[in-house]
Length: 142
Picture (cartoon, helix red, strand yellow):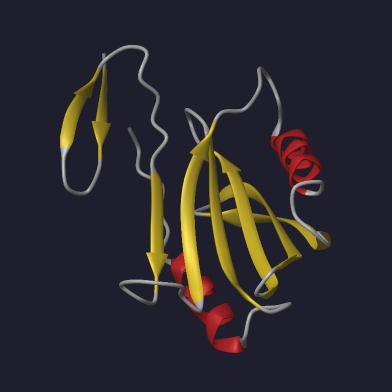
């Protein structure tokens, strides 16, 4: 049985249950937000490295999102850990969407930080807010 930590609670996690936590940070309490930042976890396949994981995810997104475009992809760091960042756009019924995604390995899984807004890029205030979020982001040691 593993111990699971969250800001609000601590529990014994029975063997077999997987952590699929999603943290959503938005500007509004209800309805659509002009900017949202979502942090999720995922499992890598076997000995898959970070680059292979990101390529697999991009290949899965492309056919599911209309007019999907990869704008850029770079290596970066988050809390001194190697990471890959990429910017994408796609079309929805309500217009174009933009997302910056940062992916990194943790001791147990892959962590994905995604900032999403309407349009084809971050407005400067969203860019600033996303960068501030990342600057304050620290991985917990288990």
